[in-house]
Length: 458
Image 1 (cartoon, rainbow, N blue to C red):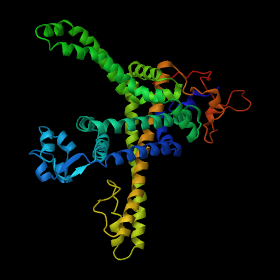
Image 2 (cartoon, rainbow, N blue to C red):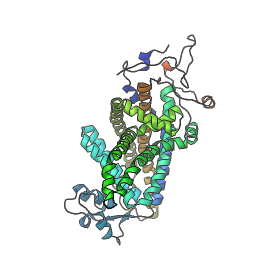
Image 3 (cartoon, helix red, strand yellow):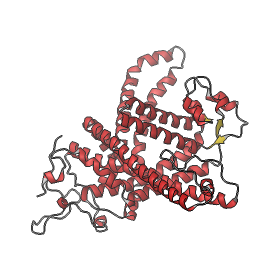
């Protein structure tokens, strides 16, 4: 039999399993899938940004009194900056500058804002400033509200594409992570994509399902609000059926809280169970409410550990660029003027450096463009790690929550018969997952084949 203490680090504690997420996230297959998804999303945003619709203006005339000094240091203010300022009128800002030539794209605006808030939240995590993390998260939600309210058509098209691409890529990453975590196997890239393409409705329907249920329960409340506009009888109907509105609102709250906390578990549920979206929603919501403290604890561990891993990966990327730049400086002559023209010196905060105007000479311009493409590839790999880590860590959390709630062994994962024969063997299988020839026990467990249910308690 498998020694339980050898399977679970630190005896009966399960949370150290989350620390496997980094090793899983940096796998070439997962990073490749995340990079391909990020490339599709960025290309979509870049093409859509050819119609520059976001008004920008010099801070000297754009910002009202009391505006943050950070925006003033950054130079131009965008619609999003004004939207986030308390008391500022975005409508007046846009109308007063309709004829200005200073415009930007929605995707570029959101990308730069998201990068700034990510680093701000990262610093807040290390300093233990939880309110700052909450503010960054709230500002990101407000940024999405700005995009949908003021650039509705753009946002519907772009985020539909981004959601579909990330859902399919996340399903493939979760499938690889699930097989690696449960059976110490590493399926091929094409096998993972085949799984995701075989379950598109489940992967897309998981996050959409709670939204549909929220709208279904919220519709009666909205109808009651419409009826309230009727003279005399409207206010009477509102007071009479307010209790039913409370009941519907209670259901909306339960679904909203459960779906927000369990959103990351939906793709892993499909990857583990090979089930439909309804089953994924049911598992994610039930696990959140059955073991809320475990779910919260695992999530905090994953967030803090992910922040540390991101700093390490970003530091590696910076050293890669910085070392290349320094060696190039040794080779270039003429006080490195040509190098500085095609490649601003990278910093840890900005891999692209202080981006200025492109050189006038065609050769320098083309060289600068190629350099930016390669540097953007390094940035893309760094962001791809974040995507891979998110899905890998949530896959581990799903396995731990399923074990805590349902008592399923950590090695249990659904494998179709035709898929089992196509799986590639792992060259890094853990010793505890392989039985000795004399034991007479199977070398791997598949489709619930474990005979021993791990009974642990934290």
